[in-house]
Image 1 (cartoon, helix red, strand yellow):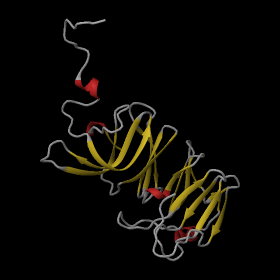
Image 2 (tube, rainbow, N blue to C red):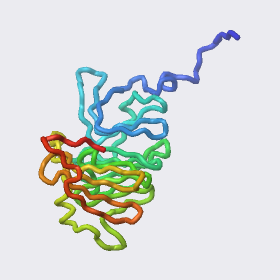
Image 3 (tube, rainbow, N blue to C red):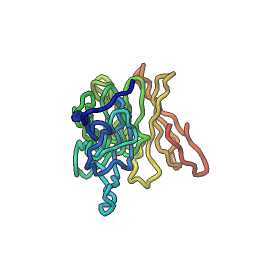
Length: 246
């Protein structure tokens, strides 16, 4: 059935139809990490390209942007979220679990609740950051990650250090710190990696992705027995070959 609009529509707007404001500064950004939650994409560690070419680009390492619902390639600058600003740190990776985003920086982790229209920080975990994306992985128990201070698991309710069991240290702090390799910069090829074997419910932590002495050593953590075992040169590759993430 054909119909004619006798009067202009006063209940719709460009912003309602497109998800963008008329004066939107930018919808294009490069990013270091991205996650999909609730039919939206969140990107973090940004280099924003402005619509105004005179402004050029701007690095916003602390910020993340969420897309409009079901528009996974559009990142309006007006939807920017900054958990912490100008703290001398920047976003290195993001993971999502149970309506939460784990926003990793080098020295801390922000737990951000995204279950509602307005996001908010639930908690900040100091000294629980990571230096590169391969230092975190998904499991069916939650999100696991490693750094010089420990191996951690977020299960949707709390963050636990898997190096501790019933109030005692399973692996000595100095032993763990000498095993783990942090990336010094983005250009550094090294860094410890963590992966998950779902069939055996085990975490595998490789000493270093860069081919050097002891880089193929691994620690394996069994989720069921909550115990660790050390393997020497299990991932060793000769010939200056770098390891990819799991």
